Length: 105
Figure 1 (spheres, helix red, strand yellow):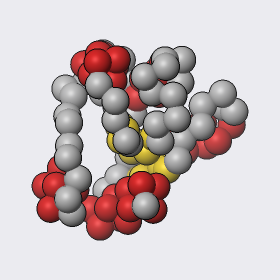
Figure 2: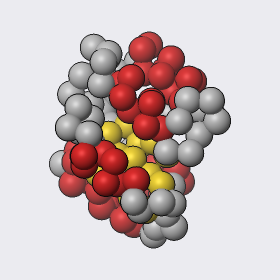
Figure 3: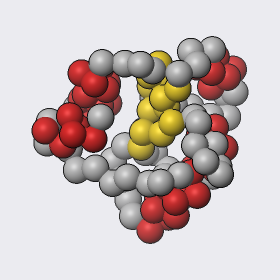
């Protein structure tokens, strides 16, 4: 995914896990956040929920990725958490680029 997005002209910042990602969001402003649900330490659901409570992530679109398509329902049911996209693994990387372009314009 990283390679394909970079080839499409996007600058990528990676995090090893949810805790690392949360620290990076607190120190830098991003145009878009893509996260997985299954991460060591802080899972993606908790990560997204915590992001929604920070000024640094206010208004930043979020795409969530998971191998479990039923998890998309969790985000749709929880009205407190609004995501802009859900990608079910395995996915063609072109699908990710398409969603990113749609969100960022």
